[in-house]
Length: 314
View 1 (tube, helix red, strand yellow):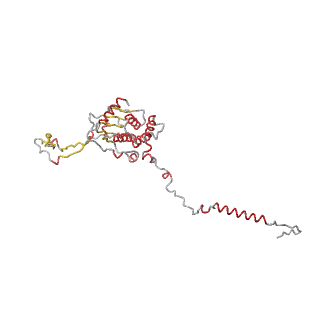
View 2 (cartoon, helix red, strand yellow):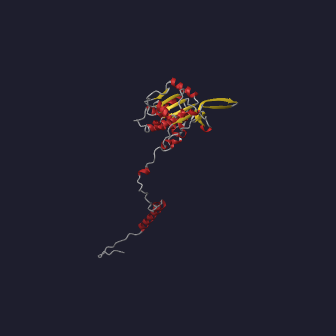
View 3 (cartoon, helix red, strand yellow):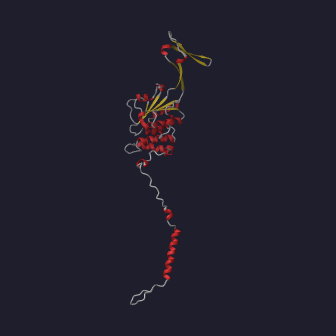
């Protein structure tokens, strides 16, 4: 990251009270994992950070940390007075202090019936972000499509674009783009490293899983040198020690491969262990054989006497 841009980003980040992390829907799990990692890092830094993204699938949500924080805007709250049919009934609005009370006066338009209480309501909105990290966006339209009208981008807002693909148009004051990188997560990892932002096991794991998923588990045909460099760096911060790291990422296919009609072979009912002679039994049988052989050896041999009839002595 260029030194001048690095200093500019750090200066704005230091002063910013409200920071948005906006993730493009097109960036998939890679973009969301890197966005949530940055969000968690900003919170750890003590910033009022909010992450704006589409809700991920259940499968993706179970792989990364911080999904429950998506869409929860944090920052200064502004109270807005809303008047229905204002064009037909309101001439102007003024205010004044009555002691320590602020009074807002809605002046009726000439010829109208004025404004009734039923036409007035109150809304809470979050103040505009002073710093926006745009992840996976390739144009200003892409960024604005993720921001609702309550979260309009101020002209004073600094936008930092993070991507592994070059944008169709320049829409950010700071570009953190590396088109030689295989994933957004490795570009994000490098930026976090350059800016010395906080990293813990959960942050490291999100970035690691983003790189792993987007490179087909570090396939040589997909992964870049930066993929492996950042993966090694993330492991030093405990990516492998995160609680999700111990969970199997692939389903057990054993049950699905076997036909449903196949049943376990029932036991035959013969306990072969009970039929197997013990060492003592074997030694006892051998001893009986030895004793029998000794007795036979001591008996006098049978003698056959020759005769014409060849009678055998019984």
